[in-house]
Image (cartoon, rainbow, N blue to C red; front, side):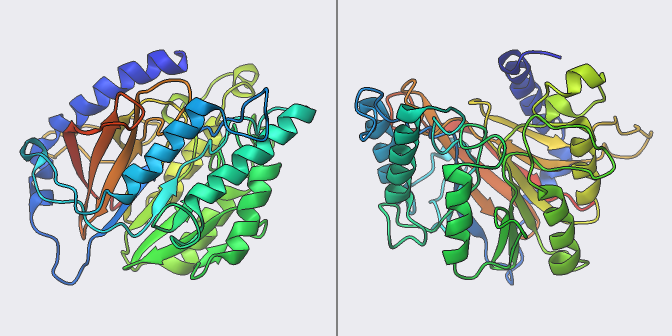
Length: 367
């Protein structure tokens, strides 16, 4: 079990190699999308960590305020911006939404009188920036968020409660979990499912989880069966924590320390097998990674048959963290048979930005 940073440095390089290694399989994905399908474009941000000033908890820390505000401005001017020829050229499409994959604020996992004031400021400022529907905040697009470990590791607190309240106000949701925290919506036939901090928990495995998944697995399975079924409609899933490090069985002592129970990771993958998965998106790591997830067990290699492809999986970097100037977010287009992802990054807290000299176009997973 490698530390998170070491694992991800290794994993990011390996994932790129894996994607390029199946280029022959991806040739079919380069064909034009079906005329009947309108591509769905959106942005994925994460780990904004809105951070209040400890000396004045009614205001944001200056670095946090500057970076988070600049990110909103960058998102607002994204549609119509041009891509470099090196990553295919063209222009960014109008955004249907912005998905925030968690760690909205920084102080939601801590306690204390001053901390409570900081949490209130951080959540208030985030809501003022992102709004709900693209009309009531600084962001010009609808915002769909999930909670991360810094927002409320046990599914309780100001941010999870705030998301539940926001879900009651959202228009056009396809489904909301019984606890009000997880939810789904549809854009141009693409199903979007927001599942919180992790996906779990499997009822047959009763051991305690480090982070409470708040029955997100149950909501996922129920939603897919009732609303997707055998339609073949593309599905996009968002959660906060990375899962690749936690996919294999470990000792009972270690699993209690892990951020994601391996039984839940394995059940998550099994639950997706009957469906067309256009992508999984998450944050948490503060490192970008892209890979095709084939599950916890190696696929058998059969002579004369192509290597099986997995679920397109995208880990976004931190997008507006107060801790430094280097940030990034993902621009996504879901097409009829594949998903195109590009990354916009900055080295100076969004004073300037540039498209990463890589792009990823992965075919949908179809079981």
